[in-house]
Length: 298
Ligand SMILES: C[S@@+](CC[C@H](N)C(=O)[O-])C[C@H]1O[C@@H](n2cnc3c(N)ncnc32)[C@H](O)[C@@H]1O
Image (tube, rainbow, N blue to C red):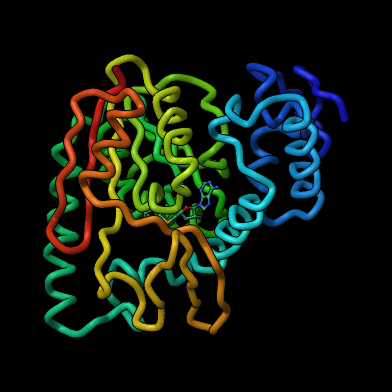
């Protein structure tokens, strides 16, 4: 199918105009919302694969720093499927429940560091319009929603429903939408936050993703990230550690999924942010479990 700058989405019929010839949407003739649903829809996945092939036939890969390869599209959709299925048990990870408990000593350390991570996030300069990418069940969303006008995006409707309930319980409002974290920004905002998402960005796509975060931000806008450090007591007791950027995860019902998991330490994260053109880069850790990074769009 040829590239089209303006089209009606082949799946939902919505009119869409792309920003440029690099946009995968124009090759797939799918709107960004439907691209975000490709994980659980065979037709959309098929269209995306074709679009990738057609686009790469006309340009060099370097022209598409954020583009998935055909192989990475499978991992991309496995991860979407995994987190949709995991949504009801996701907060067990934060709460150290069931398979995520590592005994009182490790769990006490975890809880103390989780508190420290929350305190760190609370000291960031969130204000104005805030976008939370891959927001999941919204563990951090009430804090963000209390500081500005929050838009909360994720590919998992089940996770977003839990985030909505959490916000309602806090009597807070936000805009919640199913949206792929890789979808191009549709506006520039004051701040972007992503918790435990950068470790799901493959090494070869990190620069591309950080570039996308910069495009989300107004000049001087704030980017903040929280993520996992490499500690054996971080994940579930039946999860083997990641190998070469891939992790096999199990759900409570025994289903297994292979997903991207690239653990980056503070130095690696700081270097990646500087390389992507961010300024005022500050990266710290809570000790064993969490790496915390903030920076401004130059
Ligand atoms: C490790 S969880 C992090 C959730 C939340 N940010 C937090 O800090 O608890 C990763 C989240 O990424 C979402 N996700 C997976 N693939 C995605 C994609 N391509 N675009 C947007 N969200 C995605 C999952 O549904 C899941 O909620």
